[in-house]
Length: 506
Image (cartoon, rainbow, N blue to C red; front, top):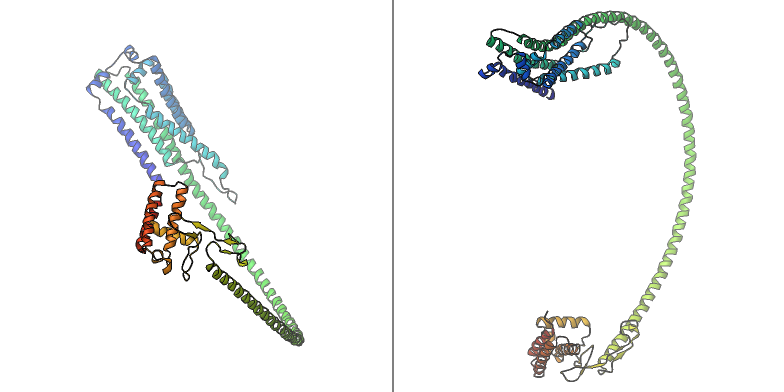
């Protein structure tokens, strides 16, 4: 696909170059006037001497590169013809060159195409040098080769020939523009005059480019002819080698066949005898081994049976001894564990009795006289325990910091968890029977009262939210009046109102 694309691009470039030269053949009336015959002075006056010299050097450089391209082919006659054309160009004076330049002939495309072809020649020359050492030599002597001429054996590929075609097409563009100018001048003037030298310059450019292309085409055709002839010679050489090889191979195969047959027969006899001898030896050895193995197996069987019987008795005796030891140890462990469990049970029962008795004693001990030094609580926070009384503001009597006085049959509530729960219910105004029932009915209303008044006292001492604390005190006094009136539910609600007053507003 890439090769096809490159070819399309090259062909398009050729078409563009041909089209670009087409306007030369459509000269207008103004151009006819520009191409009117001129004297040498008029021609030289149109350009600076440096411009004429640069234009001459550019054309000479193009022809010199083309001369090298022809010389590479080795065609001396064609090279001499190119030298003659270049010599003719050197005889053209500056005035005639000025006339040539006035035709506005652009040498750029020709120079570019010649340079590209020259680069291809250099690359091909490098490849030929690198591949000279890679040529495969035949195994047999006298193998004929193609009879190459001075053109050598390096054929030009399609890309190379297309580049040479581009040089010719660019030269034809130069020639067409110059020749059109020559024709116009002749028609307008009625005679040729010095303008023929201008036409000669155009012809030289075309002739040299044709020489380049013809030289490479000639060499390609010459290489084709030499290789065709060489192929016939090689075919005859190969045919002769095959005929000789056929006779040699057949004779060698016949000789090898006899040698192989005799050797196979001799080997067969020798192998048969060896197999018979080996068979007898193997059978005798197998029989001997069989008897040895059977006898050894019988002996080993007896030894194994005797050893197994001995091991069996040893294992059975050991198992019986281990069984008796384990049973005796298990029985001893059982008795020890049971005795320890019974002892621990008795200790726990005694401890529980002591704790129970101490709790009954504490419950029936008056407030302010309660204390406990129970040994079971040694090491616990607050040990030994004492329960002093604390005066409450706003209410009568005193209560313990850990328990409120309750009826003789009511449970005592102790613990920080119950206090936190009670505060939560008071702050949220939630009702709970345990909280609005009095202690005489198993409730905690007196504890609610104690919590509210304790908080009022603490915030008053610490001057926390004085206004809110004063409002809470008024609400707590109302709750005390309701409690004294045995309006227990209303008293609880009023304590909740008082407690909510105590909480600072952020």
